[in-house]
Image (cartoon, rainbow, N blue to C red; front, side):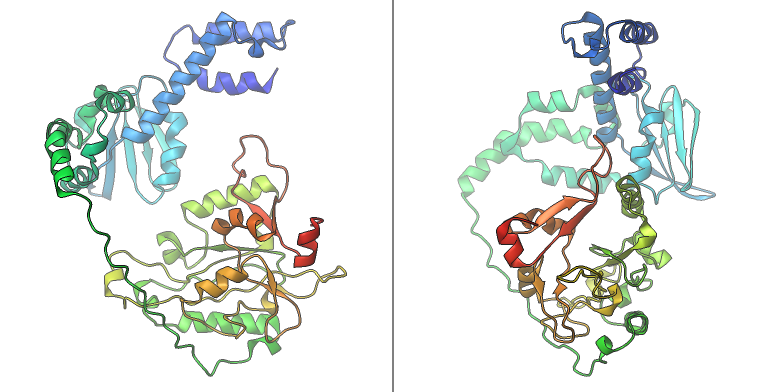
Length: 437
């Protein structure tokens, strides 16, 4: 049986047409009785019909993702978010994974006429269908949402036909912002005329960020210590930090992994779940990261994972922080191969340096750090060449700097690992120029 048929049938079988089962059975019988290349016959009526069914199901799923609106409801067991949707096809159970990944920290329920899905933070439970009246009519957040929508509505780019094609009117009754669309469309010509009359708005003067250069002077010599002791000392320093970033967070989130790890993964900053757990990469992005590692064949326990910033920045606490507050960088480096082969050090044997100096630096060294990213450089305290941390966002620019970005292993077609896990192979400049990396 061709793999393409399984992929097609998995989606088309969610179509509402009662003839879908008979259609898929006929295709399966033909595929296994002499027409192995049937799915490549673009003019076959049954193939066309099955593909049209799958396309309709995928479009319905896209509309579910785009037009579902949760409303907050206070219950005896706490806050719950309820949403009502009327899909054209049997898509709810198959699409719960999208909402679990996106709203893992919320307790929510999605109600449809034929089924319902309920997430409690650990498992999803399917239930019977409901009624539109079972979902809250509105909540306190809708005023803010409607104000946001009105402010991002661009009258100069209004295209009513395209809007109705992408957001059919049948979905409007479940969208809080829909009650403002008619008014915004009616006001569009006047607002465009006013914009033209005012002319272009002068660009605001560019604000220069203050550069903070107060690097602590008396730092211990971590590089002459045992790697395990050096990492423990650094961890103690981070956990004891009560600077502007630290006071916003519940706790510091230090990296974890084996000393001597061959792979180092650096995230941007901890999320809210990491802030509570005190461990890196345990939230929604961390769970996707774990799946990507699994597909790539990389055991997480063999890699070192950390974040550039060690504290979660709470949006509601950010205003209380100093405007020039920076971030501390404490990154163990992965093991580095010697020029003649073999291992030249442990991951914790070296620490990320700021301008060649050991210890904690302040944000503001981005120019120097960016210039070194992806290239070997020498640290002051060791003869082994270090490499500046190469974040995922910089991977695309590596080729322009003469480096190669290679997958850890061949990625399965359509697999989650596509673009999610990459190993950056950086050699010395001479080998990069020769192109024999």
